[in-house]
Amino acid sequence: MRLHRNLCFATVDGLLQIFNEGQYADKVVQQLLKRDKRWGSRDRAFVAETTYDIVRWKRLYAEIANVKEPFSRDDIWRMFAVWATLKGIKLPDWKYFENTPTRKIKGRFDELSKIRKIKESIPDWIDNIAVKELGEAKWTKEIQALNEQADVILRVNTLKTTKEKLQNILFDLDIDTETLKDYPDALRLKERANVFSTEAFKDGLFEVQDASSQLVADFLQVEPGMRVVDTCAGAGGKTLHLASIMQNKGQIIALDIYANKLKELKRRAKRNGAHNIEPRHIDSTKVIKKLHDQADRVLIDAPCSGLGVLRRNPDAKWKLEPEFLDRIKNTQAEILSSYSKMVKSGGQLVYATCSILPSENQEQVNKFLASEEGKEFTFVKDKKVLAHESGFDGFYMALLKRK
Image (cartoon, rainbow, N blue to C red; front, side):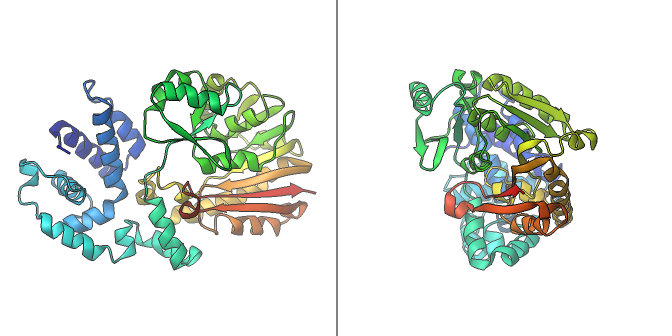
């Protein structure tokens, strides 16, 4: 592979924004990809994948390059040189790469690879908590899996098409997909491709949604005609899945504290042809109170540390702080206690997170069941999804039934 100056410059600029200005990697990459209209798909793929790669391995590369935060532009070039050397890419004779000790880089890599938190590029405090909660052996396998690049998984919108039809449509566009056993609506891309630019996407025939995330709507056991409340709907990935399982029959009330996310959900619902979704902004406690004892099914896709989805959000591990974890656990407990009141007698509730930590998952459920509000509920089943076992994102879901 030959390195091109303008692509490398773009990557370095992006990394400075992500590391020093605390910007989100996905937003920065989106901006970078609009930088030069002449770039082809290969060029854009290089910028996106290299940026994510260096974000993912920030700690390892910084240790090898012997640089510390906040990074100067020269520091980022040194980390870039480490990335290229470890990938076996020949460094051009640019001034940024003068005196790069390629042999020393490989030696440092071998040496540092003996220390898990550096090898897997993870902050000390996350490493410590995960070892405490999952155990050394399980966490070692899990963090390794969470550092792999995530596959692109589509969820077929069964309101508009079937899996077979969509596969054929994409195949005609040179996009090859395969089905996944135990994931009824999922297709995996055999090679990465920009699926968002296809007519099939614009016509609402599919959404991009990880396979683990697709398990949640099924877990809720919804049926056409039910009244369902999705309490933390966000931009609506799971809401749209619920609408397709319910065949557009019944009602889904999509709640969120962020009005802008619900606006995006409305746009997506229109594209998906999902007509049974009613977004409601939680601007006061009244919104929740009005729905007490009203719902056949309630989904709480709770805010969490997001440690299960590091493969697609590698910058999250650098933005997370121990105080946030404490705060989010309190929020989870409050949400469970308050939103569970919307389930009517005989109805069901799913509590889900994209975290792998038991303290955010089964421990929260146990605490809730032991509380005053939780005494109304019985535990039906739960599912712990780990990336190293499933090959997809880390997730947790628990099904509870109201007496």
